[in-house]
Length: 181
Image 1 (cartoon, rainbow, N blue to C red):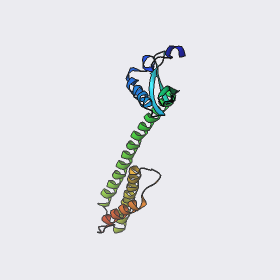
Image 2 (image 1 turned 90 degrees about the vertical axis):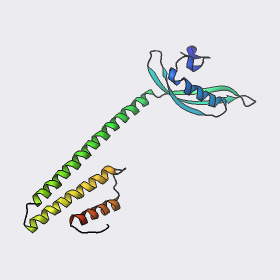
Image 3 (image 1 turned 90 degrees about the horizontal axis):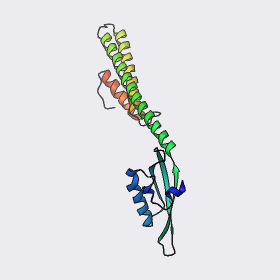
């Protein structure tokens, strides 16, 4: 209730002890005439739970330019804080899953490429050998685009010039040619 806190410093009532210093600093900035000040901290409610409050503070100056009153308006942002934490946790989980999927795809493509190389080593027919080499190169191309997507900051886009250069270099090596692509 208002009468419980009216006229008393906030740190004497509802403010969590570890938050006192940040609030005192915000008030000191206000007293120095630097306003408005926005800050965030949590309070301990009557029932002992924590409530996050986002504050917007300003001052009213007297006729001499001195701080006469401090006006603090707080908004309970506890629900938003909890939502943000759930979103962060979900994002961390998705990042772990994405890394795992990337690792598995990369390994599977490498296994397929190795199996094609192994099979090709037993083939004597030039036409069949060319089919194995082309299939292996397709797998390597898929692995390359997969790697570029994984390394890209934006999964919707890949730097095509970089991809094409890597692909050409890979194909030149694959066919035993030299070149700087």
